[in-house]
Structure formats: structure tokens, C-alpha cells
Amino acid sequence: MTGLVIVFYLYLHLAVLSILLIGRSAWSSFLSLVTSKGFLALEVVLIATVLFHGLNGIRVALVGSGIAVSRERAMLWGATALATAGTVFAALHILGAL
Picture 1 (cartoon, one colour):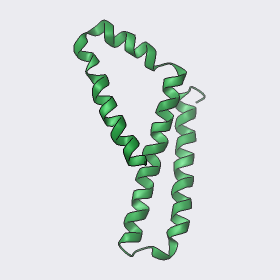
Picture 2 (tube, rainbow, N blue to C red):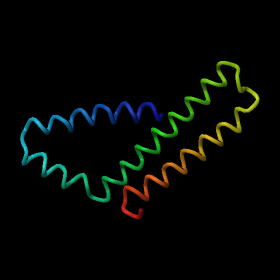
Picture 3 (cartoon, rainbow, N blue to C red):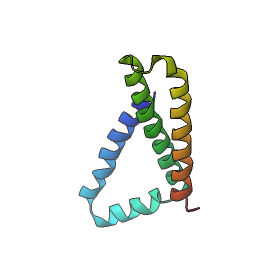
Picture 4 (cartoon, rainbow, N blue to C red):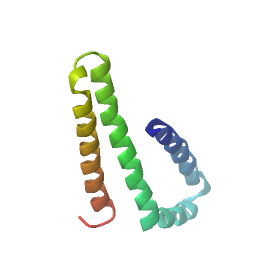
């Protein structure tokens, strides 16, 4: 699921960059919209998705290669904890609490 969210964001990002072709005023208007708290909260969701996807990918690679099969559950909880901590830090930073 996280991979699908990341692919969706990639296409959305490319579409957003096409606004640059319209001109400076369109880009400025767009920036005022996406710097609102609601859109910034979506950035936090994106960060959570990327963090968990990457950390879980490392876990899957380690288990799949036979390196850490016996620690699969602990690594899942560790990836979840690290992704949660990173997301909280990013949320505080992005939303202006830090």
C-alpha cells in the first residue's frame, strides 16, 4: 500500500511541477495554497509513508536473505517505532512547533 501512495505522489508531483510552465503568478498562487496547514499535514502523511516503506523494505530484505529471520517481528516493531518517531519529529518541524 505504501508503494502505491508513493507512486501516486510521484505523478502528482510531476503534475504540480507543470504549473511552473504557466508562469510565476500561477506558481505563487499555488504556493500560497500548499503552504496551508491542511496541505502541510498531507506532507506529514507522505513522510510517514516513505519512512515506513523504506524501513520495512530493509526488514523484508534482511528476512528474505536469511540474515535475520528469527528477529522478523522485532524488526517490524522497530521499523514501526522508528517511522513513528521520525513522523512525529517531522510533524513538529513542518507544522511549526519546532
